[in-house]
Each structure stands twice: as structure tokens, then as C-alpha cells.
Amino acid sequence: MGKILYIYDCKHARRSNARRVAFTKELYGFTYSWKTKTGLKEKRKLGLLDEYIGAEAIADSAILVSEEHKMIFDDLFRSYGDILTYKVFSVEEEL
Image (cartoon, rainbow, N blue to C red):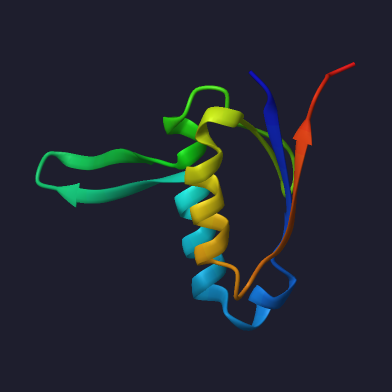
């Protein structure tokens, strides 16, 4: 099965910090913590890269995804299209 390469830039997002942070959290996930009577608790919210096998960050602003998960990542990038510029490539062979 082939791979899909997404290369993106959040250059326009510098004016909209909240949207950039939301995109990053949805893609990479995040850890949140809260205080309780017994101490500090932490929990990790998984991002799309954690949830889908074969999806990985290969560089800053570049991710590699299995072809079978392309529609999910396309939806994510489309929904943040107002702050992102991105290109999508089909990877035929890794050398």
C-alpha cells in the first residue's frame, strides 16, 4: 500500500494563534493535567498521528500517512485550509 506525504505551512496562522494551536493539537495530540486532593493527575489526548498506524511526522511540517487513511487527513487539512498552505504527494518508493 502506498504512502501519502503532506507538507504544510502555518504562515498565515501567526495572526490566528488559536486556530494554529487547535490544528497542532488535533494532529499531534497533547497532555493535560489537573490538581486533585491526592496530587497532580495527567492524561494524554491522542492526535491523528497517534491514532492511525503508519502515520508519522518525518520533519517539521511534513507527515507521512498510509494511503488508507488519506481521507481522514484530507478532511483535517481542508478544515484548517484558511490558515494552512499545503501540498499533498503520493510516494511510490522510499529509497
